[in-house]
Image (tube, rainbow, N blue to C red; front, side, top):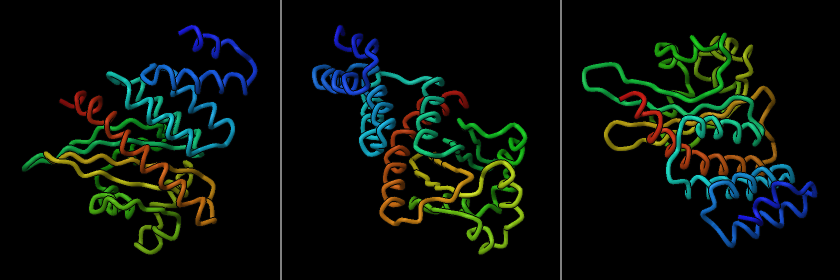
Length: 219
């Protein structure tokens, strides 16, 4: 505990990182050390280490609450995406599915985001309904599916490029994770593959948040 408190007080970044790494080795179930380590790695551009540390922190938490769901959004933003959403869909026999989400959608775009009818036409959402393989999308995705007007509308709010993926779970539960930004995604295949892999790992742990927090709110 004393070493962790020292890491919080120190202003030297290299010393702070060394202290945090020592604490994570001595006390791997410390509730805060992995989150702080993730942020230190992000500051250094070490994304793989950052995602690994953050997800380790998720794994050792005894419980999660809504504020920690918001923390997931902030972490994904630091990975380079302006917009983030974690959505749970719960199927109901003979009725419309129920949706609950944690996201940072602009207020002016909220109605479109929640519109089930638009969702049925959206090629990215339709891909996620049928697949677990991530989709990397841009304007061409919507052109190909005759839905360019949807892209043009959402582009005004920063939804120009992104990556989306879904997990289809037992009992009619589905978890979708989407990250979007205004800028184009990297063209380097290796860098893009790494980003997708990091986000897949993030999605696996984000579904723990979704099922333990969001579904309980819908119940």
